[in-house]
Image 1 (tube, rainbow, N blue to C red):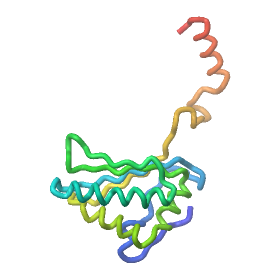
Image 2: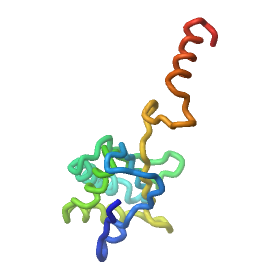
Image 3: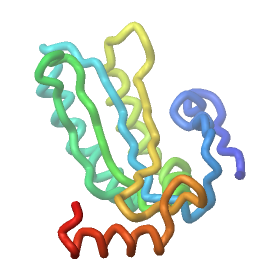
Image 4: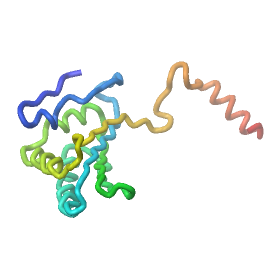
Length: 154
């Protein structure tokens, strides 16, 4: 896996993510969640800025972008989007323009938490997309189960 590196102020934004799964360039889709804590008096300005962040993400092939505010903790906001593959995510992180990086820094500047902005990267696993060699029954077991259901043996 090639390292992603950045210098100076961009290092915090583009630091290498921790990866403990064996990913390939085609692994995906990837779900990215970024949690911000934003003071109530800044909520409207933050939301307005995030509309521009959305356009930036979409320019870099992200899809399914959303911003959500926690109803139990109104200062907690979560930005969420998908990248088609791991390689697309890495490209997304490295092909942003200065304006897009400035948007990211402005969004992070709204963060008031004592901890840094939390970024989660998850490999999405739709049903039926994963076949474990030992843990998931094979086709013969699936067919036997289907036959039992067809006979009414539920």
